[in-house]
Length: 293
Image (cartoon, rainbow, N blue to C red; front, top):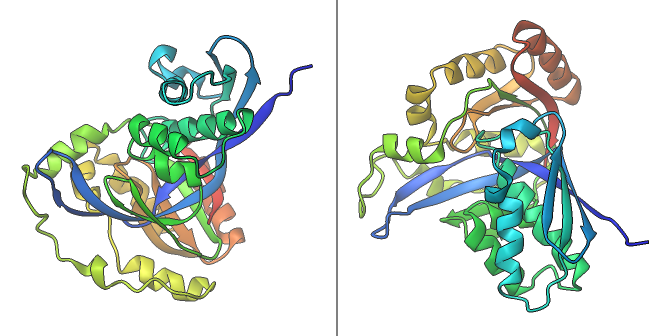
C-alpha cells in the first residue's frame, strides 16, 4: 500500500506589517513580525504517476478553479527544478478563509512543498524547494517555515525569532480583500519611501519567553495596510471594535492585507469567551480562538 503523507497548513498572522517603500520594479519592501496559529488547513499527498488535486472541507467552494490553485503551482515549480520528481494526488481539507490576510493559499502551497520534499528525500533547506516557494508567492517562504519570523523585503528575507505562545482570537467578517487593491490604495509610486515614521527600526524584540515583554513590543508596531483596507472594507472597523471591547483583549490589529483581524488576549479562557460572545453576535463571521507562536 502506498503511504499517505500529511501536513498542516497553519494560518499566518502578521503581528506587525511595516511598509518601507516601493522599489523601482514595483514591488513593496516590507518588514513584518509573523507568527502562526494552531488553526489550519489539512493537506495530504498520495504518491501517484500523475499530479492532481482534490478539495473538500467547509471552505472548499472558496478555492475557485483548481488549475490556478497554489498547491499545484508550487508542485509544478518544484517539478521544473527536480527531474523525476515524485508527485501524486493532493487532498486539501479547506478550513481557512480565502483572500483573508492569513496566507491560506500560501500555507497550502508551503505544505505541498514540504510533502513533496518528504516524498523525494529532499532536505528542509533544499534550495530547489526554497526557490519553488519564492516563485509561487511572496508569503510562501515564511509559510514553509511555519514558525515565528521577522520577514523583510518582498518576503524572501527571513530571520527566526523565539516568542511565547500568545492566546488570540482571529475574525474574518466574510468579505474578500484583494492584496493588489490594498497596495493600490496605499498609493506609493515606484521609488517612493513610505511616509509613516520609522518606529519599527527601533523595536527591540524581547529575548525572553514572557508575553508581558512581548505585548508592548508588538503594540509599538503597526500594520500600514490597515488604513487603506479599512477604506475598501469598512466592516473591518467593526471587527476591531468587537475585539477591543472583549474582556482580556490586550491588542487588536488587522493581519496582512485583511480582512482578518486578530486580538491578543491575557489568557486562553478570555480568548475562548470572546470567541463564543462574538460568534453569537455575528454568526456569519469566521471566529476562532487560537494560539499564536
